[in-house]
Image (cartoon, rainbow, N blue to C red):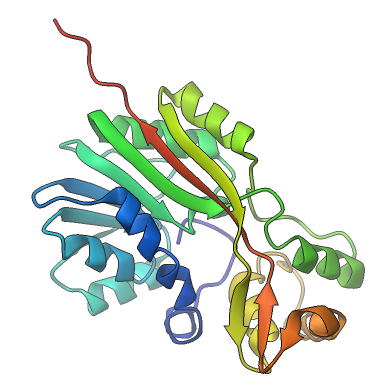
Length: 253
């Protein structure tokens, strides 16, 4: 995943949170990778979607700022090209046909820097296909955390359609499609909410000692249980923003 204060546990991520890349399957349909295309996967994590893109015959580069995630990706798919890279400061040469990102860009508050780097990485006429958390994503979880823990720092960037489209347009992109939609996401197990908070919410509680974080997770879990837990699993109020943008083709000489 991109650079963040969150603590990443690749083994837990792969064992308990495979829905992250499972939901990315429909985004791959939108990407429609072709044999021989060069494609950049931003925030590749342990590499599952990068691998799926490569099965089309495309040449894929996966980048992530987490050494642990890149280490796992290289171990999972040793034939693919994975690089430890900050998504706000990168260059790719030669330029790629497409930039792809799933469930990663909401971890990077400097969206303008990511957009500028992505624009520079693309060939003229290249496409930018991304999905990230959108406005209102996990709102009930954030509210419960604030009610239990008081004021906490928000580690995420959950933009509106207009906000993110403006970021991309300022970078030079033409935005062809931008859609904000609800995607209630189920996390299995009695401990599903606690595990989710441990995996993804540690950045919310950064700076607190381990015991305090554990107490907050327990209190948040109990606060959300009546509305979010049913039939052995938890449903979290995900909202996703899906975007398709194009780098304009170069004008004829």
